[in-house]
Image 1 (cartoon, protein in one colour):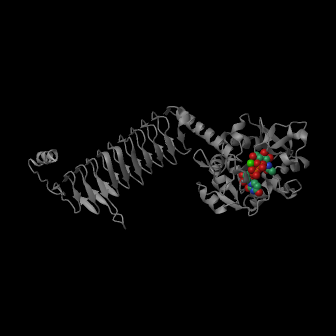
Image 2: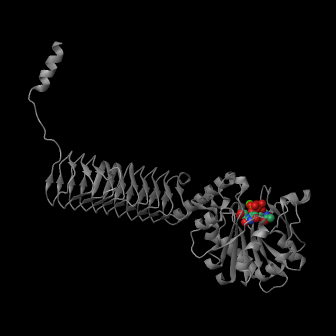
Length: 468
Ligand code: UD1
Ligand code: CA
């Protein structure tokens, strides 16, 4: 079926009602842009090379925001209506045979199953001169703002009447046009030139194509969809928030059905592309963002926020871990209150505890940094113990420098490691040291002033203050 379908996505509008400097399709719900959600669904019915997004407002930004390679773009420099937008893609798609699927760019809740069903219904029109195609319809409790579906006596769609042009009687129609169309491509382009701006908005209305085709004897099959929420078009931030809520609930449900336990599912925030393995447990108020991947049998503690992280199997993330682009290997235990960023990498069976920050740092297998440390630009081997209060001084005010720590090193508490620095395998750093030069294998390095004891000093001081 895929090689018979061309998709045009309308994404050139600004979306005035969003009250935003940003083009509407760039706004995000469920962890991705409105446009990427539509593209995701479109990919289920067409090859990327046969998907064309019509862009206009902030064309370059919109184009850059699309993640799928191979998608094509057409430009509509002036927004003269949805019909005009499709005409702008003419060069890219008019030669393509088969079905022309046109999708509004502001309906992120659309499910691939619905598109597949629409294409299937549209296929019935193929080679059938009395049929022009098929469109999705739904009944809205409040149809305000949507185009109303006018049916003929055979139940076919005879016309779509826009809110502004509708008669009082038509305004009472609750069956509406959600903006998902499937036309016989050849018929569509044969008659597309007949679109006019003869309407109150002085725009080229794509919706007029239904009436135009009907006039030429090609009727349009309606495809009623029960669940109106799936067809919500986003025009304001209130609808954006609603779409976000629905997408997140969908994502949580999908994960739960795939074997993930989610405590208090309404409280978690999981982006569309996130993956979580079987038997993992997400505690309440967890945020999993971007391209985060969590393995099987993990536990993610409450309040943790992870973006673009790669977490292997059997990992424990204790509460309130904030991690960005971090890698956590099998069976590691992180947190509570750990910060990991910029390719921090916690090795297998390693442990990172509270108030430890790792930046661009690799912590080897089985190594531990249990409390209160800053480890930046470091490469730390296996079996290392980083004492509480250890700081890598990676910045000299101008440049960042690296710290290399070999295998089996013991770094005593409150050590200050001034980079660039190498501490070789098996070395031992005395607590409270400031280390500025390389430490050789198996050596002990002490970098602090020697302790001086003055017997009786304290007692004498007490006597002095008492006699005053
Ligand atoms: C449109 C339909 C309406 C339907 C509703 C569903 C028309 C005339 N009306 O109305 O029947 O009920 O969608 O949500 O089509 N766009 C462009 N270029 C333009 C104008 C719009 O690319 O010149 C894009 C927008 O970016 C948007 C989509 O087309 O993604 C729909 O445009 P919008 O202005 O939201 O149409 P509605 O008034 O909602
Ligand atoms: Ca709209």
